[in-house]
Image (cartoon, rainbow, N blue to C red; front, side):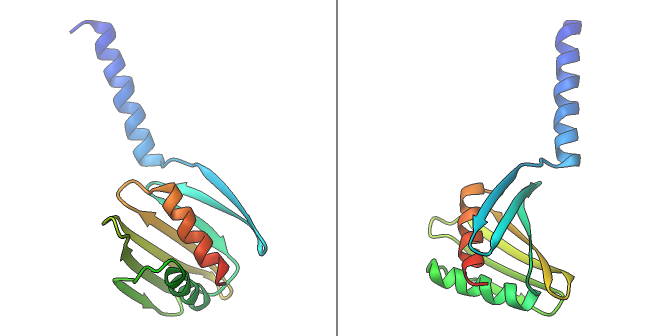
Length: 132
């Protein structure tokens, strides 16, 4: 192995490790009639802060899934957190989580598939936001 090739391998591995440890911050802004939400990529999820309680977000998640004709596999919620899991018709799994930040503010996290499909996460988010 020549010295240059070994150096490139070390740099490539270091880059991958830093990506895994630090996450990948990509932002997608969504302007809606209720404001502008920034969906931010965090590892394999898309996240946004919502001005609504966890209970309100959970109800919006369930209604949004109905609008998309998707039946959740599991749906659990309390005043602190909510988790809804399901599967798209093609077998891709998804998880939507809401966590309380304040009494009327929640952090929503959407993961579609293993790597966090952006298009599907945005479609789920739009359906949820429409029902808030």
